[in-house]
Structures are given as C-alpha cells and as structure tokens.
Length: 146
Image 1 (cartoon, helix red, strand yellow):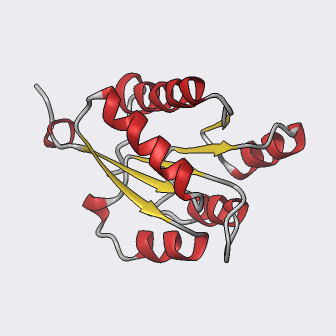
Image 2 (cartoon, rainbow, N blue to C red):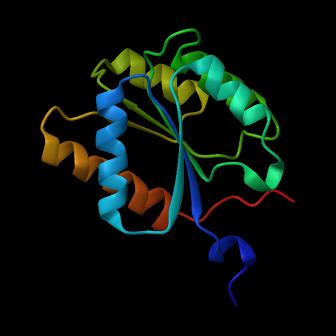
C-alpha cells in the first residue's frame, strides 16, 4: 500500500545562481518525465529564507546545491541545513563545476549526500541531472522523520 507521501509530486529545490545552468537543469528534469515540482533559489540567503518559511509537509524531497553562490555560499547552506533538525534529513546533492578533492571532502564532512561535478558537455550535463533525479527520487528510500 502506498503512502500519501509516495503519491504526491516530488519536490526539488535547486539552489543555483547561473541562469543558464538553471535552464539546463529544468530541461533535463522535464525530459525525465517524473511528476515533480521544482523551486529555484538564486543565492544562499534566499534559499535559507525559503526553507525556513516552509511548513514541514512542504519541505523538498531533494536539494540540488551549487557551491559558488552569492550572499551565502553553498558550504554555508549545506552546514546550516545539516545543523537544522527540520532540514537535516533532506538529501543534498552538491552539483558544482569544482573538481577539487578538497571541495569534495569538505562537502561530505558537512553532510552532503553526494557530490557531482557538472559536465561541460550538454548531453552529459542532462544525463547527470537525470541520474541524480533517478537515484534520489526513484531508487533511494527517503528518511521519514516522525
């Protein structure tokens, strides 16, 4: 028997300041065909204010986070989300152009669920986004906090 949670459209929060990357992520998610709602945030301060204003039942099922954000960077957003009892169970996928092992290590130390380097090739970029969605919203079982 399916729960009400599994019947609703999945919620994704994309925290990304690059308009072209937002457009490409949204296009890739649309191509995947799953029922989902995607909210976007252009900077870390906006993202944290958005998350703070959500009722518990409206929290995103997945956060896709860029690191290099204005106002409050991705590391700060990641650390604040993982320190917040209401938000810590939300999977956060860091989706960044960085290939630095130091950045990868730091993100995992702060509680990132995964780190994916953004490909520069459009097809590879779309494939990466679709694989993130397929795993985190299709294959992975969510943590349901009671």
